[in-house]
Amino acid sequence: MNIKVMYHTINGNTGKVAEAIAGALGVKAERIGEVSISEPVDMLFIGDGIYAGKPDISTVDFIRTLNGSMVKKAVVFGTYGVQEKAIKIMKELLEEQGINVSAESFGCKGKCWAIMNRRHPNADDLLAAKEFAKGVLNEL
Image 1 (cartoon, rainbow, N blue to C red):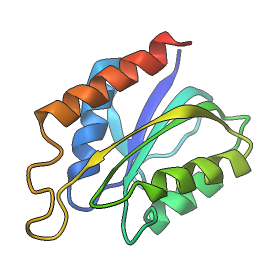
Image 2: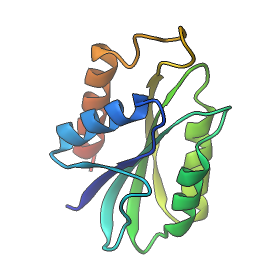
Image 3: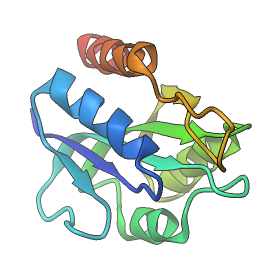
């Protein structure tokens, strides 16, 4: 099974979650913008932080390059300061591209601004991300 974990991060929060998910699945986490999908992927874990209630434009642009013939299934994850709204937006964008999107997603708090959620993602969050990834994979 060809599995990819791709992410965008500004503050490093989503990168930590991506690394945890990738480690649990035995693959490498890759940054959006540094690599592309050049061969069919059975399962794409895709994540971003939430910036002003939405995913970063680089993630939106990347999703718009994808199609259902190259990505069989997508699983969304993200980090947020206050709200998880961007996870829903990413799911909708993926579906618009004809990609089957898992109903399950993973989100956890991430440090934002100077003091808000400053200890997140923490060890418990990263363990939960690993368990989430293993659970999604086991459902196949």
